[in-house]
Amino acid sequence: MREKQQILIADDEPNLRRVLGAQLQRDGYDVLLAEDGQQALSMLSEHHVDVLISDLRMPRIDGMQLLKRVVEDDPELPVILITAHGTVDTAVEALKLGAFDYVTKPFDRHEFKNVVDKAARAAELRQREVDVEGRGLIGQSHVMREIHAVVNKVADTPSTVLITGESGTGKELIARALHETSSRRDKPFIRVNCAAIPRDLIESELFGYEKGAFTGAVTSKPGRFELAHGGTLFLDEIGEIPVNMQVKLLRAIQEQEFERVGGIKTIAVDVRLVTATNRELLEEIREQRFREDLYYRLNVVQIRLPPLRERKGDIPLLVEHFLRRFRERLNKRQVVGVTDSAMDVLAAHMWPGNIRELENVIERATLFCDTDLIDVPDLPPDLRAASQSSPGVQESASAASLSFGEPTAVNELAPETEPLLGLKEKVREAAARIERDLIVRALEQTAGNVTHAARLLKISRKSLQTKMKELGLRDAKDEF
Image (cartoon, rainbow, N blue to C red; front, side, top):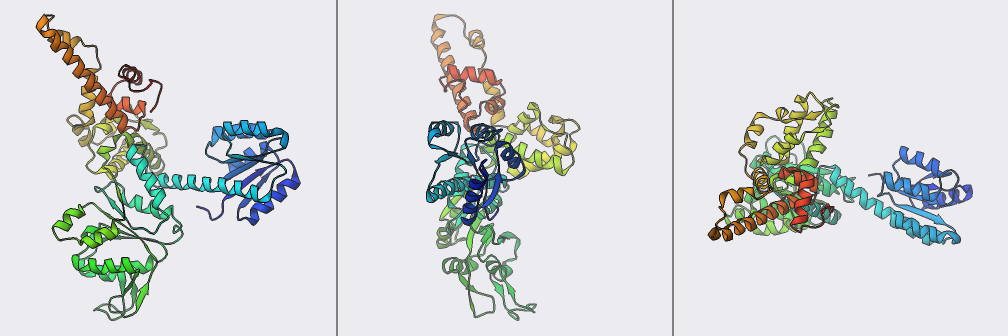
């Protein structure tokens, strides 16, 4: 993120533009000046603008027209309107259209600064959220929205964070997002894979060593704690650290100080610690392979990343994300999407390798695709074969497609005789319950997106909307 936020002022009064621009520069902002709405639109297309300040009355394109264009193109951009006393009603109408706020001429300098600062803070929060998603934390499922919220809430705190989850779920992405959305983002992000370091070297790797500390130590070397000073230290696979080293690590975390191997000088550091593991640390504690006091020191905030099989509704978004990356990297710009059939196969797979496996599959499919859409033959053979017998959504979809028909099968199975009428009614009721459960599960997995849910259930969107209405699952027009 840039050190200074950029503000665009659009006003046809040269003196007011200069005065406001000078004030905002003194307040620490970068400033762009436009003489009317037409020029402002041009500058918005050429520059990254964090806040737009516009007069209501301007030639060519006035403030209201400019606002409407901005809301269409970038509805999250804060727009502050400058009004005269006689146009306050218009300003109120502008707020309804999406303006962030307005100030009335002549306005107090401090009032103006407060409004601008508030808009700038909103823009910064928006950018941080974009940064989080831009670093691969893709997903609109309920669990991913919760993770986004936690990352944004704890990123700028000194508290330790423990990230848990299976391999390939994106634990390092979370660690980097915590760093990049914090005030430490301009300082080092140091990653250590504890599982990749020999046990007898992990102390010198973390804390460094002095010259002559052991055979081969011909010079002094700083450890990862020192290198991360002022920034973030990410210890991946923390469960692999030997028990005898865990005591020293605990002290370094608690005191923010340590000694190099072979040294006597205490070194103080300012490090934000983030750790990750795919092990069940509580089980490791029971087996006396992990210290309980270290666990609670690391586990101030825990972020659990779900396996991809528990958030299949995010698969279309992840596919789109990886496809954008690989079509450029592999020079396959003609590949613009995925067929419904291929998406069904992807949705049915259980993804034991999680997001890392999906990334690999999309890279391969993009490479092999010779048309504009990735289709089933472009997917790996083992994935296609596994999808034929994979449990989960595939079974749910099959069950759903069977139960969504008219109840003719019940009539065939149950002759119109008096003793079986009650049974037939019970079968209908059971089928309705199954349908409802399947729909609810699909909507939960897709964060309420009816189109994606219909795809998982292998029915049309219209059929799903109709069935939702019949079962009382909100209005058919509601996208949840």
